[in-house]
Structures are given as C-alpha cells and as structure tokens.
Image 1 (cartoon, rainbow over the protein chains, first blue to last red):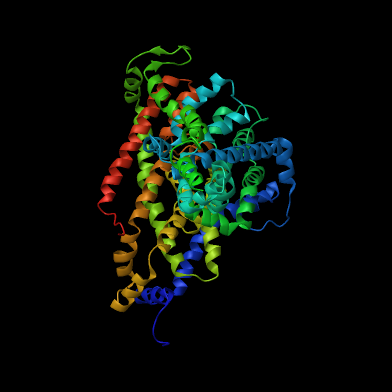
Image 2 (image 1 turned 60 degrees about the vertical axis):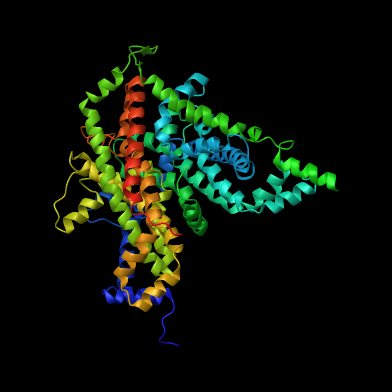
Amino acid sequence: MKSRRQSPLATFERGFRLIGVSKVHLHLILFMVSLVSLTPYLWALSTSLKLRTDVFTPIPQWIPHTLNTSNYREVFSMAPFGRYLVNTVIVVLGILVIQELVIVLSAYVFARMRFRGSGILFALFLIQMMLPVHAIIVPNYLTMRKLGLLDSRLAMMLPFWASGYGTFLLRQAFRQIPQDFEDAALLDGCSALRFLWQVLVPLAKPTLIAHALISVVTHWNDFYWPLVVTDSPAVRTLTIGLAMFVQQESGADWTLLMAATIFVTAPLMVTFLVFQRKFVESFMSAGIKG
Amino acid sequence: MTGDCEVVSMHSKWGRGPNPYVYLIPSLVLLGMFTYYPMLYSLYISFFSWDIFTPQPVFCGFDNYVAMFGEPVFWLVLKNTLMYTVVTIPITMAISLLLAVLLNENPGWMRNLYRVACFYPTMIPAAAAGMLWVWLFNPGIGLVNYYLKKLGVPTVEWLYDMKWALPAIMIVSIWKNFGYYMLIYLAGLQGISRELYECCDIEGAGFWARLRYITLPLLSSTSLFVVIVSLINSFQVFDLAHVMTQGGPADRTNTLVYYIYQNAFRFWNMGQASALTVVFVLFLLAVIAISMRFMERGVYYEV
C-alpha cells in the first residue's frame, strides 16, 4: 500500500524529479519570486523610517539604524492626509452601499423573472462589463459639469452606483437558490421584496461579500476619475492627494515621499493581511475588477 | 386553499406582484446616464470642433479624425499602447501560470506566504505603486541600478531614458498584475479533476507531458478570460504613466488613455478627445475580437 502513489502531490513530486526539479527547486523559485515581489514595498517602508541623510548611503541600508517616525508627522503637517483618508472612506462606502442595493434589485429581476425584453436588457448590462471605464470619462465629466457636481464627493460616486458586473455576479448566485424557497415563501404570504431581503440576500452573502471586497479595492485605488472631477483638497481622495503631494514635494525628499506612499496604501494593506484568506477567495471566485 | 394557490402562482408568474421594470429603474437610469449616454455622446461630439477657441460646439464633420490621423504623436501613442500590450500580456501570463502551477503542487505551510507575497501588489493603488518604483528606478541612488551594477550589468537612466521609460512602466505593470492573474489561474487549476493526473501517473507521463496535454488544454478557457481582461486593462494604462512620467520623455510613455486625458483636460479640446475615445473603443473591440477568434480554435471546452 505504501508504495502506491495516491496523492497528486506525490505525483507531481515525481514529475518534478523526472525533469530534475525537486521540491527544493520549487520552493526556491517561489521564494525568489516572493522576495522580488516584496522588495518594492519593504524598501519603501524602510526608506520612510529613515533619516533624510541615511538615504544616500553607498550601500543600501535595509534596516534603518534609528527608527524615526517623524517623516509621517511631517507629511501630515504638509498636506491634509487625514482629510483625504476621510474622503476616501466616504466615497468608497458611499459607492458600496448604494451599489449593493441597486445590483440586488436588478440581479433579482434577471435571476427570477421572465418578461418582455429581458434578454436585450441583460445584454445591455453585460456591455457595461466589457466597456473600458476610461473610455467614458470625458463625457461623464461634461455631464457632471452640466449638473454642477464638479468637485464633489457625489460626483466621484455617481457613475459607479449601477454595475453590470455586480448584477451579473449576483444573478448567478441568486439562480443557485432553489425556486421552491420562493414558492413556499410566497405561499405563506411573504412579499417578493421581503423574500428578497430576508431569504435571497442572506443566502447569497458569500457572493455579496466577494463583490463588496472587489468594489472597495477598486474604488479605494481609483485614480483617473477622482483626478478629473476634483479640484480642491476638501474633497480629494488619498490617491489624488498622493499625486498632488508628489508634485508639491518636487525637491524629491524620498523619506517623505515614501512615508506618504506607505500611508496611502496602509489601510488596505493591513485589512488585506488580516482578512487575507477572504480577499484571496473573493478575487478567485469573483474574478475581474469593477 | 385552491384559491390561494392560484393567487400565488399568478403572483409569481404574471405580474400582480412585483413589476420587473420597477426594480430595474435605478440600474437603468444610472447606466443610461453614465454608460450608454456617454458612449453615444462621445460619438456625437467627435464630429464637433469644441475647444478653448470654440467654446460652443460647432459641427465640423470628420475634421477631428483627419487631424488625429495626421498627428505623428497619435501614431507614437498607438505604437506605445500596442507595444505595452504585446510585451506585458504574454510575460504576465507566463509568470502567473507558472506560479499558479507551482503553488498548486505545493500545499505546504509556506503556500499562504507565497500567495500573499505575490498578490499584495493588487491591493496597492497604481498611483502609489508608481511612486514605489520611481524610487527604485532612481538613476543615482535607486535600488534597481545598485543591484544591476553589482551584477555587472550596464545601468540606464530608466524613466529619463527615451528607450527605457516604457519598459520600466511595463516592469511595474507586470509586478502589479501577475499575482492577480495567478489567482485566476489557481481558481482554474482547482477545477481540474485530480483523477486526470492520477491517470497520467499510471500511464507514466512526465511533468511536461502533463502540462502540455492536461493542464494547458483544460486551462484554455481561463486563459481566454485572462487575455480579454488583460487586454481591456492594458489599453487603459493611465495611473502609472501619470505618476511616473507624465507621458514623457518626448511622449515615449504616452498611451491612448493618457493622450485622451491630455487632449481633454490639458488642451481642453473635447471634440478631439471624443474622436480619440471613439477610435480607442473601436480599436480595443477589434483587438478583442481578433484575439478571441485566434484563441477560440485552441480553447478546449469540457463537455
């Protein structure tokens, strides 16, 4: 029994051995790639904690000999990064909450109802999935100008409240839930809306969470649209704040620039490390960004 | 009771209950305003001359298109975008596929660590990622040139060098995206039945045979998905170009989307920007259609 290989792992180990790749090699490749991948962030973190003069050492110093957090304080005094953070949170959550409400309604329709024009309407939703967001920024900017919404947080949220991709994703999840549930609930006098909120939505929670995480990451990191529609620090988000800070700090003080960069990425990075498994699962199951 | 049942079945099938159109109103209004209307409006305004000198749009026929094709920068921008696409997509796909295959074979405790190390760049805003690399690519005291020198490789000025600025941005984009596509491939790999590999084992097929005859064919629909998503993404490089080079030096890193941005928000030439947008969308659709046709022959669908 022992000699019989059963686990695919063993299978592959033998495969690798046949071509001279052992498990050690496997770890070696993965380890090297991980190291290279981690380098930019670790190096920035290290730089952000250095004294200004320690940046210019001829041999790179990975661990700063004095841990100095004054760069972060200085960044905060130079630009309203606290304000940017608040704005980002407002915009991201504002998009998320309304987006979920809107897609739950439309996904329910496409999952459960047959009606005239449903095919064409659903195709219209799918078009939005394929359309590059960057292609409609100019006309949307003009729309916002007409509506008098330029330089507002609302303008940053509005175009993302409807989501063809979210609708598609959630529709698939709703379809997995047996029709019997609905028949039974309706038989008991439950209204369609109540059924949607109290049965379908809780049952589709994994998909909702997956979509929510992707939405948060996408809009936290968004750049082009907020750049175009905002003008003043009062409404700007973190990514725009960073780009403005870079222009302002053109004297290239790398310790400050890296402190600002690390600060901008830190909230998502910490959340990602804590909920690592959930993030990975979500991105694996719900694929594309949007 | 029977009466109730009839009411219920009517309720769910023929109206009387929720009207589907009512539920769709929020989505349709929003999509209409911010997706469909903009698409048509771009097309419409692309036939108007509308810039600082003509504050009100004036119909000008195909002038914007003629002007665009006559502009050498446009062709350079197109070349840059295509170059970026043609180089980054295959490299990113190869790296992510290789890592996914390796990760899939190695369920040790290090697996999570590797996965996090490869995937975390996805969580970083491209604007911030650009900054991390501007620092690494610094010609004088950057880490990249330091280690290149150590290896005895001639160093370059990277973002300041006409030849190397675009490759530098490509490197950043590969670094930022490979972990994400790796996850997509991992999801695809998990869908492949383990029995197939066990069969291989019995037949005595080696690692490469397995990869060639089982893994790759069964991943072909995942690959098609990855190609399309990365095509859409690679045509939209904006953040990196904006933060790292502002399209320079001498437009060598200027991409289609960045060029549209310049026309619209630097030169305030909305007509020209709209014409560019139309060409951009048509071009992207054409490239997607071609690659789908090209790849579809190779896609194996599991029956």
